[in-house]
Length: 392
Length: 126
Image (cartoon, rainbow over all chains, first blue to last red; front, side, top):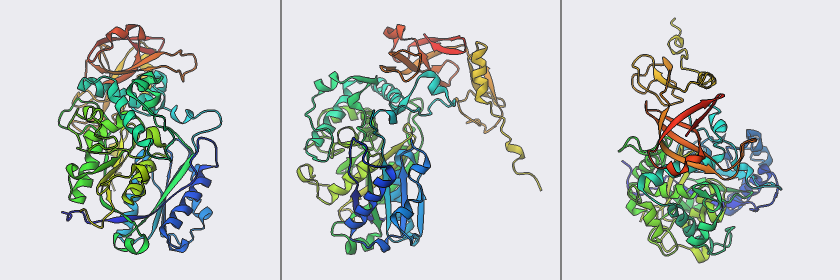
């Protein structure tokens, strides 16, 4: 059993490219910018980077962000190099594998990068039209017209709302909470005040999801540098320590088997809390992967922060919003901040742990849960992070 | 030396059989050929006995509505929005995704009973 809060690694650098709704370069070019920024932020020399982990969007082919990124970056001394295939859980997974490789002596300083350029000249919606496989019958989703991640997630959301007897406003309060945070974040993309009435006027995408239930895609890249916990304080003035790491892979099969986890998130959470020697009650803030509003409700319950069916009332009461007792998605999240898949919650956790949040800075970022979620609730990874070398 | 692969020759039903069934006007679902358990669509082995011998069986075509979505914008050429897609629990057990006739929207409630209609290879519950 792990001792309480012993750090297993640390994030010592955070960097990003420009983020934009306009085309500003290829994903590969944006990745280079983010990696360079992260290395500069860490204070490490270029030659001290000996690991590179790559996360591309699952919606694009491998050659959009190939291993040859190494050559673009002229990282010539790598001892660790791979592309992680955990879909939306990949960003968190990269950090986990970096920490494990460092602990095993396979690398010293590992840079982890996500980059994507989904927003073209014509539309920002194209990235969301391919089908997610949820039926078990190849090609069947397209024949049924269940296009886009939104459709597959909306189907799970309706089942959830029905199961707990919730109205559709349950989703809207998540959007309202995120927007309240975004208003305090100059780097967020959507700042206009948002009420639940505004939410109800938002156009449908795939009922029960409205436009405001869906992530706000941007072009851009974010990278972090991971190093050993023991070395972190000598590299960075404000390292962010990793206390717990877990994964869980199990799709959403509905409510047919009471007592079993609804998704792999519950499994990922158990692993992360066990490693950290902490419990959900110790968590001071959450940065969730929430490509759709619904996933924040489900994550609050799956990770044990709310009881089953209780997340909607929790969010509606303002507990996840500014001045709430469990701040969530404190940069505006995917809905009002920006959607750079798993790196959106990772970057926000780093900013908060370093106390660089400006108007949105949390009083207590001591133990944050950071999640990744890929497929249609299929692939989950979680981190527990904070600013101290061990949990306070 | 024994061929380690000889016992794992895939005998799972190929999904073309499901589509071919629809073309014949039949709604099929998978069962274990050994223990006869009804299996989820997409299973390649039996969850109960581990057998890889699966078979397709005709469903009575009665399903209860577990969830649905309504597309307000169509991504499908020739299909006009709005249209609905439902998730059904077949009476025999497995959950099945299928088109849902939007004209019955007043019956879109949890557990609502719907019947499969197979016409020209297309499956719709209404």
